Image (cartoon, rainbow, N blue to C red):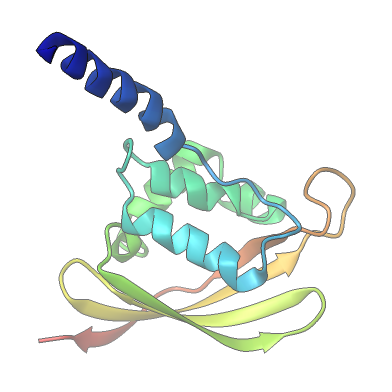
Length: 154
């Protein structure tokens, strides 16, 4: 009976793990603020369920013009892990506030509390992809500003 129980637990874990690692793909059903929240949630738990999954999730919602500028993916990973953006990795919390939105562009102010309990503010812009192809009419990130330090929470 114990062997069956252990086997059942192992079987469930092995079959559940791939579901946890699934990268969310852009879709016309995903609203602009949701794009940013998906990216931030990924970065918040960057190495779960595997190393750099959060960065890969963020990359998935980068506009192709942004990907050409910041990519390929390995270069993008280095950029996020660098001094300018590493506070996004494994951060404690975030807030997303809409500043502007029209039919094809939205701008948000994002405040992040990093793992060192320091606050940073970003401007995060998403645009609707208007070219042909599978990304047509999907909201994608076109710009993330340099962080503005706001001080600590202590």
